[in-house]
Length: 283
Image (tube, rainbow, N blue to C red; front, top):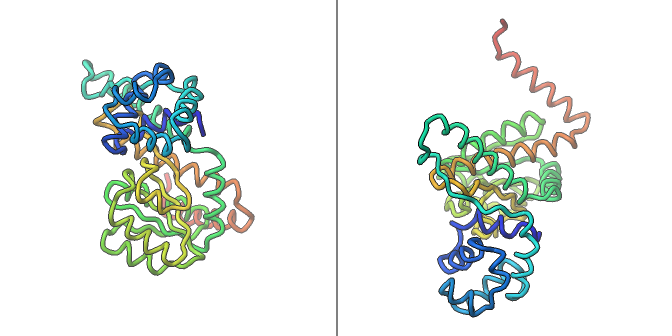
């Protein structure tokens, strides 16, 4: 996915190590100029060693420094450098809603760019093949996990979500290889979720994760990673934007599942709608 590296570096900047962040910052500040840099020039500008640049190149371009420059060059036409413009600093209250909307839309577009259709198709196939779906998300990720569970139930897919920190690993240990686990964590470093997924993997359970950090411990455990993004434009609203992106991924996954719904699934869906409608008051 060569055209996505600049976007990936931009939205994942806060998840990089200090050395990686210095290299990425130099690249993002002027990607076009970076292409002309020698390794020595980049080393001086980023204040890192040649070895660090080589490791960075292998990690993000699966090759040496020339491969990294080629990958950056291939993505220049699709990259728009973010301008940090926090709504907190807006001079007029009338601009707050507009700026929030613009940043959220930008976050959603970044998320759509970072997730190929093939990834969502594969995720939907993994869910369809499972007899049961267990979703893990604690703290701020819990509402996204609950939303995904409800959407899956609407489709007639047996699903539950676990948001309790103490019981996550215990619940995961009760799964088997016919089930599937979906883990949600912005940082990909939430201990309770990682412990639960480790427990699930010991039972041979396939794992899908939703995270903003594609190089996190959680992502490394997963069989499939769906990447959520912020706009990269607002420091104070970064987490909230990612949650909108997570909801987008949950909705997109269910859209692909809905497209694959057979007659039995349609019957389950209509049955659930009837139950839900019975809880609505009439006009």
